Length: 186
Image 1: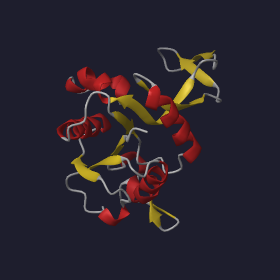
Image 2: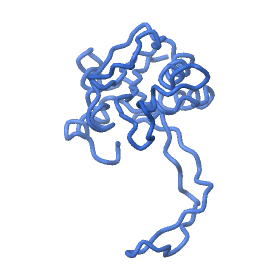
Image 3: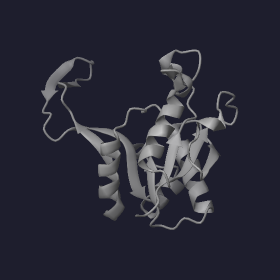
Image 4: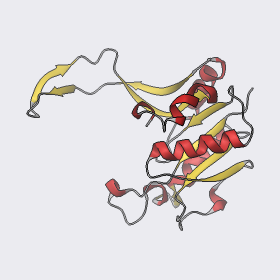
């Protein structure tokens, strides 16, 4: 089984959350969201190599929360995409080739299911490009008009919520990442 690289963007300041600290440092059951997320990922991928993207001035982080033996701290960027690009550059600097499998998982998703992680890995491990976790849209979806009013109801068939992790071969994103990645990757 190939050993994946895990990229966990965790440099956000949590502005939208309105808390007194970034959401990755809020606690659930006495443990930070960051620690829960890393623990869940480690249980699924104990041999994975981790790039943890943190703000350069982060003073909340404790390395004791990282259960991985092979990990590196990478400076996060102004936006998630910038953090991912920094991590990809670090992975390349470590000598990873185009076939290296990279899984990007949002730090604020500590409840990802182990069986979902296993199924995703089974799919992306043998896929030439990659894949992602996704869930069918169950909610009613509305499309607005130019005035911001409901124009019509969208058909849900074929619509999915994109979740994380998102997995891909390192070589599949070389061009987008050198162009600072398109919005579709954010």
